[in-house]
Image (cartoon, rainbow over the protein chains, first blue to last red):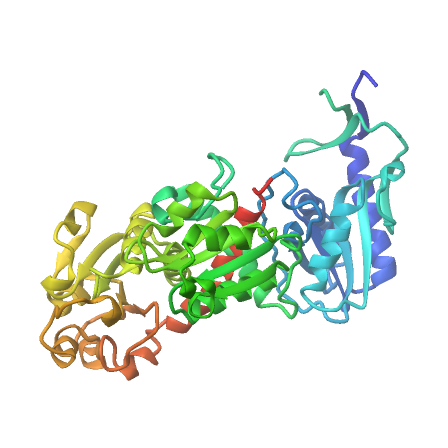
Length: 180
Length: 309
């Protein structure tokens, strides 16, 4: 792949987030027993935006919002790369809650595995779901599957990566060659 | 510990800079969150073996390191000189090399000789964490003390900290001075002239021999134990006299027109350097220090443990 490919434009991203919000309201109702948790570092912006949209659509919802870092639970610590933990902030009990984990890109599934372990250190949720903006479904190394997906990327190439641009003005998702 | 050259060992605060310490604190914040949750373990160091070599008595530090190691999922070997071949005349390097030949990745060592950890780091491959070497340094204690001050005040910068007592024989004092100064705190040492090293002012600390004056000046008072086991001569007439002049009592605290934070690295000699009512008062954060010790040691071991390849 030589040219960068725009996977999600700003307009499409807003539509996806609105769809995500409606899907979650449909499944989780007023969120009295549910919480959304953004995964550090790149799932946070999506999770925050989603929480805002849910509150706009359904002002009465009792949505709980948290942020989770999985660094201490990674399976590749001590194998060359140095990892610095980010902040986990879950100011509610996750015991018996329905948790929706939110990340930008689902690739090998290893981060999500680590995140589930990190989540379990806060308590025993009733159910855990996974929501991702981009699912690179042919790159999985663990049996992990998302419940809510923005777009699916079927590229089998390992020489490509997905880049999420998320500034105040522009929110776009690109598929790029690893050289770019 | 990423932006600058990675640190292989933690031999003392002297080898660190402010950025290293901030990284350790931020990592410890995350471990504290974990430790306050229902599941206190992570598998982060599951494929690491750590040997705790204690050639000197220790309760708090040894237990704290062991707990930190186990909560990180490491395999742990405990060794104390009183029940080992050291008693039969084995040298330090031979003892450690024998332990390392059993595939140990990291060594946490306390030793009565200043510089023992540095010596070991030069001669063996494993990573070394100094858990106190003679009268030299006790870096993790200084880190947990500064971390506790940061937790109490939000920041260490600009805080005035007085270290009171046996500065001459204290590794805690030296590491605290280095650490607090790196973080921008002002440091004073206070004690009888015989227990203050002659040229300590060269380190940029204030020196006082009057506890009341020091207390008026400070935001934090870190009370040190009189280390009778290291004193080869009499440095003051009697414990009673020392206690009258340099012991922290509620009466002395009540004379101040402000609340200061009281710390102690332990073990406490109640009624000598600190009275029981002060040690158990709301101004004392002694038990918070112990709690923070586990998070700080987890952070140090985690950060070093990533760099073993």
